[in-house]
Image (cartoon, rainbow, N blue to C red; front, side):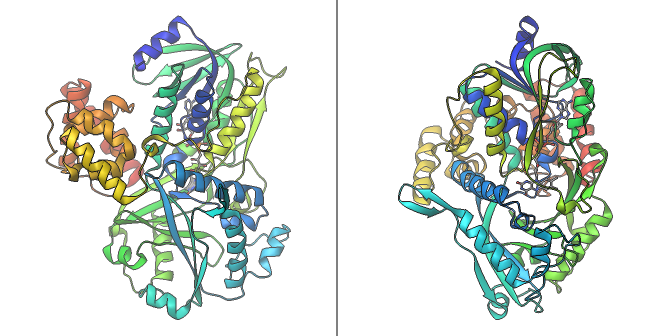
Length: 569
Ligand SMILES: Cc1cc2nc3c(=O)[nH]c(=O)nc-3n(C[C@H](O)[C@H](O)[C@H](O)COP(=O)(O)OP(=O)(O)OC[C@H]3O[C@@H](n4cnc5c(N)ncnc54)[C@H](O)[C@@H]3O)c2cc1C
């Protein structure tokens, strides 16, 4: 069913088993698991999918070595296992990421680590080689997975390089280092695409599972919840048996709309910048650099395609809608890079994109944001003190990396409440274009050649499509071949029908959905004013916009780019 069919079927029958509020990765992960267990489920997202914290991540699938220090062993083990699963199930989007920790002190942190572990020390400080070594050994132990032929590794073990070896490998590195440690995590190269592919998989499997963006939960009482369509202003009532509040840092405000006064969330803002700087990009090679400043805050310098992603901060914030990457944060990042690569000259002019989001962390009395647990939990509200006929499960915390495990726990609880059995689990379920993805480059080449032969799309174009969409490239290419297609003038690696396919099949309604989330155009600094104009023409053609609507969409996109991402076109 398309969007309007789903909405009109809700008018006819507002009864559903589960309503999920919020289309970030936690809501979407739960939606997929419930759908694969044959539950009729509706997910509503007030904006585009993954437009909250889930679009503001550091793009890492990681266990979080630092959490070992807070004693969160369960969390790290779970996240490492989930990282491995993501690399296996979505190989077109999640890939092993070699990570280097430049170390400036041999012994610092040796005393701090156990004290922090015992929660006797509030002030974090820089860790030395020995503490990092111990952390990485534990991390390696968690990284071993049990395969059919005994213990297997999805990523290699950590390694220590001496000062000389490090300087030979990265010749721009600060000579004051004493060592570097190298270990592996995962890079989630296009998180927003991964999320949309999870939705499409779920809907393809279960005809009674629907996810709608631009539909806001605006209120409710007794057995009814009211939804407002942001595209038409129309309202819809639904009557769920169970509500899952996955509104991230907006969880408490969503609960307030249902008459509940909760204080589950204590969000912290985190920002990033993306730099176009060939010298820095070359200096880091294919490694992410992950290190601490003097007061123990973590900094990452990350190879994002041909650009460099730098982050992040961790600052308490009351209103998540106000999160922006400030000039002060940008200057802090630039200063941090100079600590590791002191001879590379950088300025604010090298920044091509900024973003900021709010982690939906649990409300906490911890003195430092780094001490707040990054674990996830389900807060249940039901019974006599609400006037609601259904319970509400609020999903607090979580990480991109461990969304599947969190979703599994929520789904188990939901199935138990609905008195339904679990029929399928998602541990080994491929995601989107990860279905049948050939890991071997020779096999990939062969698939591209045969696809080219029967779709008529050139090998060069198919190679790009495969990188973007994995095996979903087949559906894209077949669609492209079904009508007159042409390469776009301002963006020669996209064609008109490729974008029309995404608009028609991937729930795109606004120009910014494509520019900011379904493609990397804005993030990688490729956008130009001419490109926006040409793209708006493709959208107008596909969605039937008149001149006024087209101009309004262009204005909306330009405003968001400037207001949230520091881009003026
Ligand atoms: C700076 C930063 C860096 C991070 N880096 C990493 C990383 O590298 N690796 C990692 O694993 N994790 C990382 N995380 C954590 C991870 O991104 C978040 O934990 C995760 O995205 C939270 O997802 P969510 O679905 O709970 O929330 P969100 O993504 O915020 O989704 C909640 C959604 O609910 C919607 N909503 C709100 N109210 C309503 C309503 N009334 N009706 C309908 N919809 C509503 C919002 O629009 C929003 O889209 C990072 C987080 C941040 C902020």
